[in-house]
Length: 318
Image (tube, rainbow, N blue to C red; front, top):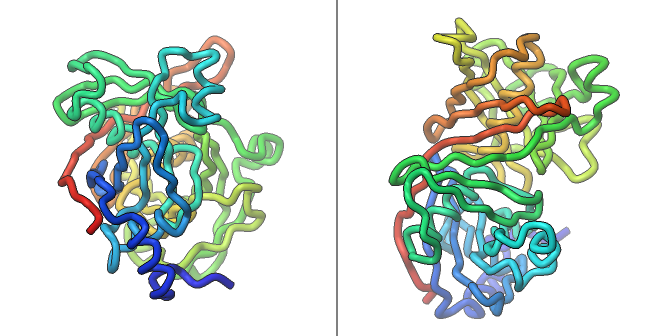
């Protein structure tokens, strides 16, 4: 068993020493925080130990994840995407805090685009769009304000369509703070999510999400787990409302999860039996994000995630 890097001083010191002189920027979207490393030409090797050391909140910079800012042409995944989307010249190379590679991060892509815009790497005025490459495919981001962005997250889908459509649940989840396993529904937003409905705000508050929830069966690539409580009333002025806490795969509990907010709103719509409810407000510990569903002619629904993006400070690894 490999110890976390914070419990292995030799690995930690070695990783940080290897990163001496590395420039970075710290940013967040509704408290979901990231280290952004500019590597425009794809020359910086970031091993899992490097990412884990930087993201460690005691010995490193501290973050939920790391985003390498790189031109798409310098990654295999980026070059593959450029064949069909030549306008996606920037790639969000996202890593979880444990060093593992992730497909997508909804809050992270807003922060990524805000970094590009504020650093003069792209010209993006309010109302303009930018297409970004990710491991989950193309994402189109619109700048809606000085520090506000919306992202076309693409269509949602069931991870297990046959089981989910039959029962509106496909798994059982047990978390610290729950007496019994709860039924859950697994949704893909380009990355995997398993959503659990709770009855009361107190149930949500009593969860201990420092401990990883147990999901049975767990999706093939693991899963993020969202716990949601619907507002009462669920709809106000035509907008659905819910509160969310999340345990992120490879990270632990975070103050926000953009793709998780999309998955949670999707699951609650299904459970409520109201597919005409297209606009949602999702409260997370770090703030509020918006989720909108856009029906398509082929029967799918594209999901639009909106929220803030903030850059906090620049630094250099000593």
